[in-house]
Image (cartoon, rainbow, N blue to C red; front, side, top):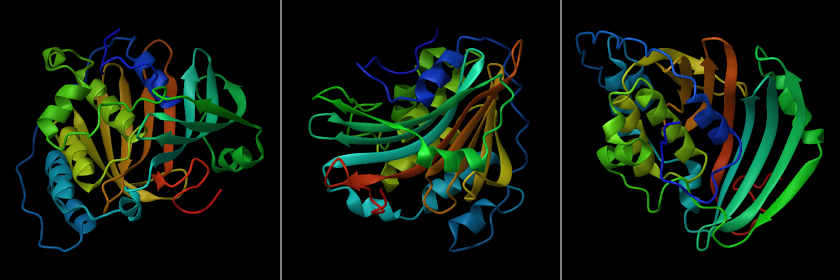
Length: 292
């Protein structure tokens, strides 16, 4: 199996294990689409409007968004000691789909922390499509609390995370593997891995968008809506016998959701991830929004 990141003692739960396992199924990469003639976006104060202008390549849209993203509300929380993340995920495990709701608090000073996990029963088969009703069921599911001692919750990449997109790409996927069919997939999975492990400030979010702009086979889908009803800019990466869709917030540049379908001998859902909330908190029980 190709290794996409430096080894750590523990990776974030949920999607990362599933994403990396998917890399064990080689397949031909899709041909890189022809690059259309560049177009100049209309003048606009709104990054959402500028990035959706007709005639732009996917690369132009992502770089334009990187240059114009605005601050996210949680950017104001960076002085607090705990990095907080709330996700919901549907992940393929052999012939079933696992369904999890995860809240994680990591104390940045020593990488200790706490996780609260809610699980719904596994769904047999690979054709399952997540639904809004399932999301509501998580609230009534039993929960498991796990505490981690110092060093147990390492970030996906060493901090502070670089804002140089070339260096970031090299940390996410070794450059010597750039000729491999799996390389585009490795890069996009790395971007997702960082987004569900570490809080990205405005400059760091811009760097991840520039990494995505350099991913071979990336395509623009137009505006897309995730399972929560949030609308963003849709991008797909097709490579290594799979297709991964990202929905990106049109103003802050945050990844809202990621959805991967695999093809080949056992096609179907491989993972669906919702990033519901992120930020920093003063304790390992609070949330940036104040909701439990």
